[in-house]
Structure formats: structure tokens, C-alpha cells
Image (tube, rainbow, N blue to C red):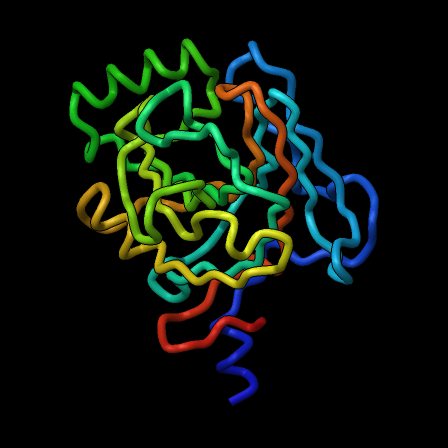
Length: 230
């Protein structure tokens, strides 16, 4: 039983000491117009976690993934915000900001992408850099839309936004989440997901020219039959 439990858990974000984010985590900028969000490992309400502070800024804190979504398709994590971004509106580019989001990026086999999709991805990478993935799921802490709302990003139909938490009712406290990444990918893009190549977190306020603080801890993948470890 102990061996089976260990196999069914894949930890990708658990932290032991305060300071700069450790390897393999690194800051990834999407575009060059906004300054990058600041990230560090800090103790927040007794938990050592990634802290992101955004001031009219945007950047991901990302790490590579090597996860078998057939075995462990469910992503678990904890997050905390001071307050949602009041001026956010996920349906508009000018409102595409979040006090916290968790992002899973995928590589899709070339033969599975249409010519039109390849063309659009090429344009996006010229505008925003090579970090733009073939497809991505974004789990966001929104300001107004109901939990479960799922929409394509206002920037690209290759990114699906999924509201995992909403409003300020649980701001200022740690909240645990669980998301079936493989099932969410199938609903958003159809078919079996390609390789999950990157996990990222972000605090993002460049479009609304506002400020926010978010934190993330205990990121791990489990089997559908398993409970989250925390």
C-alpha cells in the first residue's frame, strides 16, 4: 500500500527554505512591455510557499514537467491571495489579470496540429516569444465568474481559462484545489493531451495596471483514485 501511494504521487512544487526560487524554477517573461512579477520563497501564514507580488507586471514562475498524465492526471495545490484583481475581466484582453493562476503547458505532436493552428502559433511566438506553448490550461482565481467557468483566453484559443476559485470570500487564507488536467484538456482541445512540458504559477496585473499578491504551495499530481496529499 505504501509503495502504491508513492507511485501515485508526483511532487512538483514543495519548498523547504525561504529565499530565491530554487532550480528548476525560473522566471519566464511573456512579451517585453510589462516589468516582471517578483517571486520568492517565503513563509506565509506558517507555510513555506512561492510568493508572487505584481505591480502592473506580468511573468510566469515556471518549471519543466515530466508527468505521465495517464497515471497521475490530477493536479493538486494550495494557493492564497490577499484580494482578487478588482478590475479584471477574463473575457477581454484589457482585463486578463489574476491574483493567482496555475498554468500547465503542453507539446502537441506536429501531425495533430492543423495548418491554421500552426500559423497562429507562429504569429504568437513572434509577438510573445518562444515560450508560447502548443496548448495550455490556466486555472485562475477570478474576481467575478462562477467556479467552473471555462473560456478560451482573449489572446489565443490555444489557452483555456478555468475558474478554480472566485471572489474574495476566501481571500487571506490557504485554499486547497484539485483539477483533472487530462479531462480538462480533452474538454478544451479534444483528444488525449500531448506531453505536459511545463508547470507555472503567476500573479498577473499588467493589463489592469493594478497590484496583487498571491502564493502557491504543495503542487503535486495524483491518480484519479487518490486523494491529494495535503
